[in-house]
Length: 356
Image (tube, rainbow, N blue to C red; front, side):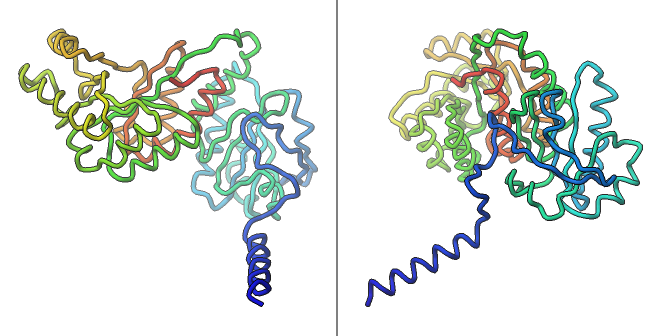
């Protein structure tokens, strides 16, 4: 009798789980590297538009949007600027609206809109593309392969940089492998530093964290976890003070106290040093050398600690992304950085960067 009750309960739970989560046959949620699922939708002009009519010709921006989303106007203006200000790139835009009110907005902004607005009122196509946030943008290459996915409008410069890269891809030596180091200062920002570690673990990316000794004593768990996950740990400082304003004795204490904290938490001495603000002079270099430490600075600094927004962080990084070996300076505790990080990692991989 007990087994029968268990079996019935299990079947009920299984049935409820199917009600809770949408099922689309054998479809797998589209991601970078997959062929974009084809669809046909009616436009605001009453025309039947097929995605297949656009693939094989140009790079495509596939934008899922909604009238009630407060970024819709920004998107329309950004797409217009993309065409007007960057004549060296060629692309098509398909904008898919998930609500039925977009006609009013199209009428208001018809001087900006040069691309079809498609109506997905029943959200069938949105479901196939697993849209859980608007706007969500996909960039498809000429073969209709999804190359980039952005949750939120990424900005005109980011779109331009991505399209330009895809247009020049065939002329690039695809066998060359480039190196990328993601580095994070001010670690740990708090117990919520685990959120950043979760992202890196999910993306299978190793990073370098420069540790604040004082914060590490207060929040030891993220430091232990970062070490256990195989990330590099380096010395930032104990009190986050400009080293150029300190005496030799004070600098050594800042370094040694932080080194002791890391050793006590991990059992391993760090060998990397990044002084706060990157303030380094010959005097500090000599101290580091005498302590057998290597100073590691950066090639790209998007100033994310100023919290300029995820769009600006992405644009600052991609605008400087040109060397075969890049070291990117980011900061723990900046929500915008964590939000944009998965998309940036996807772009870095697409551009043949390997993480180290």
